[in-house]
Image (cartoon, rainbow, N blue to C red; front, side, top):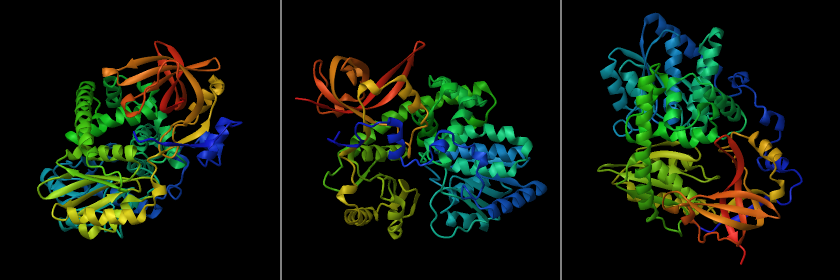
Length: 542
């Protein structure tokens, strides 16, 4: 880990929660702590065109009347499979002849494509309507191809636009994830008698909102919080089996379990195999089938972790410290390059692109830093690219191998001119406030829990306590990769966990005095709950 300066927002706060709300720019605490149900937001509020919804309703009625074959064209990440499952189940409830389709990452690639349409036509010869979920907003070439073959196209998506879309109907907003868009569409399509189903379907919205790293404020906080509650009471056999195979309790799931346990397993299929299995998991009513898929996803995730580690280790060797962006290329497994790019951003504090280079094409995954819109930047170089799409903080792109050197040179030069050194946050660790141990009370811990779910836009609070004494040190994990410490400040004692101790320049020693940066966690084991500190950084007093 690079040495990082500590940026403390508040020192000696009178009220910790007030400081946390201020640092997050939360001006309406009541709505923050008690977010309204997503169904109370109008289509206009969430950025969806009522006119487009009206057109879609008419098109669905035609499809029902003519008994058309309809295909849901999804994506292979968590948001993609959740939106596919949700839209599939909704249209099935309406009585449509509808089938799900998720492209193969290694064959059809991301988003709607001619290859994907050909595969659909091969399997469903009379298909006349394709509805995209979580993709399609920049797929004009593929949409034209579908129309040439007599297929109407409805796009539902949340990614950034790039000019006018040529689909028959476009339902689009950037205010939420693709599954949330599908949920609002479903809410508009179904009768009030299906209210229970709509509420239950928020489980998929909660999972996708967190896994797709939407900013958990405003509308998305409502979607995440009510979505998590729906996950906890979910009747989906697939989610229950996946939680069992992951050794977590579904009724106690939170943002952490979704983001770091369930989400990675659901993503693993699309990275290393085929994501349609996850759609089946989410929709099946057969316990045995669900358990089979859940075990497969856990095994794929273990393999994914191994492959990711290999790619990250290789990618690190190409990082140039003096450059403002890391652009890495190699014979990498393309299913994990996004994870590698994300890790490089964490470690270097600068935008990163990792390319998996094939014989003719290189597929890239980009991750960015706050203030640098990576997708907008990449679109300025579209003449050098085969495709590009994404969000402010993440993008996918492809380029011909022959054009790759020119693109890297041109884009690197652009970033060098565009990003100021002050924008690079590699050496800065944001800390909400300084906090003496005596203020870590059960009341504070309860108040912090009411700020959940934590994630993008509402990060878990980070504190700093100065001059704490190390009373004990205990190595943990395989090869002592982690460390547990017992810390004391004027008689107030807490256990702290330091993960991946090798990333720090020094190790804590018994008797040493530290300044520690940490988040507060509740750990329950054998029926006993205790407060512990998850240590992010520390400095030793000489």
